[in-house]
Image (cartoon, rainbow, N blue to C red):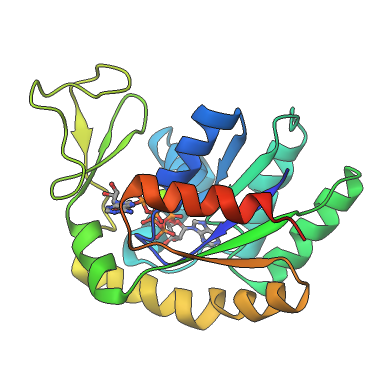
Length: 216
Ligand code: AP5
Ligand code: MG
C-alpha cells in the first residue's frame, strides 16, 4: 500500500511515518530528511537549498521530484509512505506519473489536522536523535531520563535550524498557499481521508490505521 501523509509543519507526519515503518515494514520517503542529509554531507545541491530551508520556503519542484525519482528506483516492496511530498500540484502530478511508470499508484492520502497554536508549541519543543532520527518533544515526548535515545541509545540530540518562530511563519504560509490545494485535489480523486492529529501519538496512529483499512 502506498500512502501520503499530508499536513502542516509539526502535524506529526514524521512521527507517524516512523511508527508505520516499525510496525508494518513500510518505507518512509521524507523529502525533508533527504534534503537535510544532502546539506549535512555538503553536496552541491545541499549547499544550494540550505538558505531556502532555513527561511522556511519550498525548495524547487525539480529538486524534490528528482530525489523521489531516485528513491523509487530502489526496492519499494513494503509499501511507501510519502512524508512531506508532494507539496505542490506539480509534485502531485509528477508522483502519479512516476508511480504509474512502476505499475503502481497511490492508495490513500491522509490529511492530519492540527491547529496552528499546537503546531507552534510542538515545533518549538522538538528535538531529534542525531544518530537515528527518532523525534522527541520537551513537552509531550521527552528524551528518557538517562539521556539516551529510546530507539538506538544515542546521546546527541539536535534542533532543526528552521524550528524557530520566524521560519515557522513562512513554513505555515507555504503550506496554506502551495500545499493545501492538494486537499481538494485528492478529495476529488476520492483518495482523501482526514485524521484528527491532536490526540496522543498512539491515538493518532490508531486513526491512521483505520483510515488505511478503508482504502477507496
Ligand atoms: P520537512 O522536514 O518535511 O518539514 P515540515 O513539513 O515542516 O514538517 P515537520 O517535519 O516540521 O513536521 P512533522 O509533521 O514531520 O512533525 P513531527 O512528527 O516531527 O521539510 C523541511 C523543509 O524542507 C521545508 O520547509 C522545505 O524547505 C523543504 N522541503 C521538504 N519537502 C519539500 C517538498 N516536497 N517540496 C519543497 N520543499 C520541500 O512532530 C513535530 C513535534 O510534535 C515532535 O516534537 C513530535 O514529538 C511532536 N508530536 C508529534 N505527534 C504528536 C502528538 N500526537 N501529540 C503530541 N506531540 C506530538
Ligand atoms: Mg517531518
